[in-house]
Structure formats: C-alpha cells, structure tokens
Image 1 (cartoon, one colour):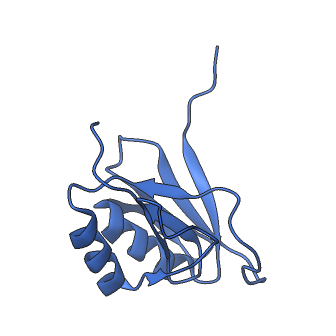
Image 2 (cartoon, rainbow, N blue to C red):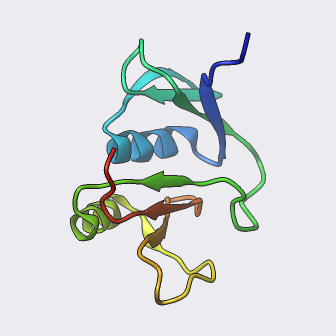
Length: 118
C-alpha cells in the first residue's frame, strides 16, 4: 500500500503567528493548537494539512521546498498577501518569469502563479 500525504511540517520561530498567516492565505482553519504545535487544514476531515513547530534557530538559506499558489487574479492576490504580511523577495528569478516570489513573515519563500486551469 502506498503512503498518503498527511501533512507538511514547517519549522517556525513563532508557530502561532505562522499558522495564522498561512490559514489566512489558504482559507484554512486552525484545527489543533498547543505551544509546541499548531495545525491548519481546510477542515478537521480534509488533509493534507500544515503543521508549524517551534525551532530555536532562524532560517538562513533559500527554501528547498516551497508552496506555489494558483489564484484567479495574480495582481489582486499579491496585494492581499502583502497586506497579510508577506514580502517580495528575489531568489534569482529573471524579469521574464510569470510568477511572483514572496516570503511569509519568517522569510519562507513561496510563489504566486498566474491563473492556471485546475
């Protein structure tokens, strides 16, 4: 039997802050919260979710894994994410790319794509 994707775990200096940011980004909800673990998901029955756990060290390099978002309107979504606390970042992308690279409040990069069929 193959494995099922249950969650992805994100190291965070402030798990509660990060969970609330990503819950707002993805229209998820917090489904579990303790000081050492905060879980977000679409609802309590739908996975994969994202778990935020505390770590003492800060992020020091570009992420090797990141989230790509697929909004209906890239410009409007970038503006919404910036208002939530995201920041524009340069990870070496050229001026010709069709995606926008942002970072969450703790510096984890993610991309906002142009609208794609689902």
